[in-house]
Image (cartoon, rainbow over all chains, first blue to last red; front, side, top):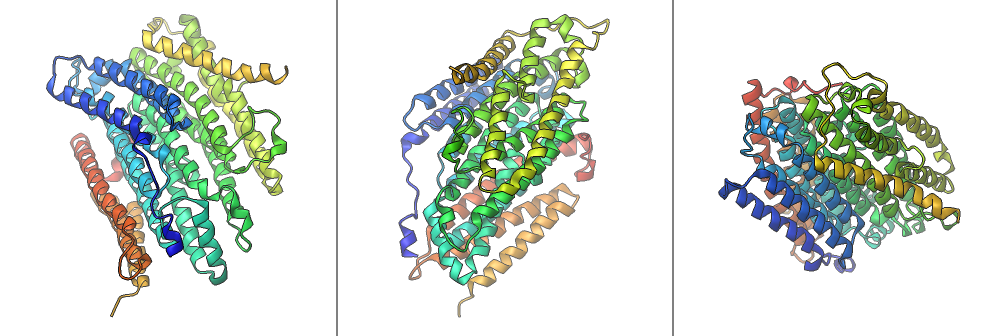
Length: 501
Length: 106
């Protein structure tokens, strides 16, 4: 074990965690202010929280320890706090039972804590850090999911999320324990794994324990991203949780899940094929292929029959996670596939781009749902009826975001879905039999067009009822939805313009 | 006489399985919670046993014990949130049976 002792502790610097400390500090100040300064309107907390997390996001981009997921997490958290800002009417009614904003302050401060957890997660290189930072995210999310305690759906979502989340945590730490037992360290590093595996080829005993630990770790990560065997919580929790929380879970928590998954595949990146007698790389690819296929089918086919917009986006988030999982089949992209820098690259970059497209479109969709819920009192798809007539500009912005989720050309969603298909083709160079995934991807991408266009159909083809007034679009909603739509279109057309120069 | 590593691992495996089965089968949310705690305790037993087994000359590798301390702390936080949610659920529905959680479905 002495040779492994050199890996025994991961090295971290304080500077890596500066953004997380800032967020924790702001959250602590807000919580104290919430307790002691009763006169301050709670919406001020929302503005402070959103601004600080977006500024920290800018800081993570410029900082030395930059990580694309950190920026994405900050962006997603900031936008979901802004959803909460425009959702105050419903929040007040569901928390204090009237128009008083008593007790709503924590609702804006807690996402900062969760975001700090995600920032730590993106810097993690060993399982202890991964576990603790992941729990910071999930424990906060349980509170946020059950926050509307006068609302049956919110309580139910909170309890379901807590039970299933705690189960996945148990699975993850059991995997971590066995990872430690088999390798002697918590560090995720390919040298550690290669040493363990090449030592076990002769005896044949360690490998089983090691594979079990890796399987348990991946199961824990699949829960966070909502992949196939661990997806059951998503539709219920997304539907029941308060809309700002659902936004947070759909974008920020999903970013955390994929940051975790990327950290877990680090040891399996490059050198594994060099060990004779083990088929770990093959096994990993097979597992990811089956999980991706099942996730695509469950998410996209389950979404077909939904009538609740939040539940629809829940299934959609499962389906989108399936497309991202396809990137993981191609951990070492071959050079000859570089048709365009926009369509291929390392798995982290592709995952980041997909998540960015997904985040921009999903946040805009949730802003629309929150607005419709506040003013028409319903989250059903039918509540979007006639928006094309009454609010033509808002309806167009909603169309852009749902078109991007479906993958219509000239939006960013098309580019990233295309990249997912290219990743599969790249993986087929090494594992030809993966061709079975291709029809599933085509079928599910087509299904996406059907169910995302249900909302577009409700807006343009259904007539507004006699009592329907035009929605009054809040300033913040208008700004964010416009910015998201512009970003989706620019990022979707720019690669095309530069590719054929 | 020392107890071999395998005995600890078998015990922790049994505890983990009982916990997982309980989460999936039992209907009372409080019992489900105890089962969740049991899963975490099973991981703790494995961690401490492995920490001793990986050590040299009687000195364990403390990394694993650090993680088990974190697990205890986080399990406590999880229970406090969970019990708060159960109290809220009992106030709303007058029951802590998981079959009554049926307002969200397809």
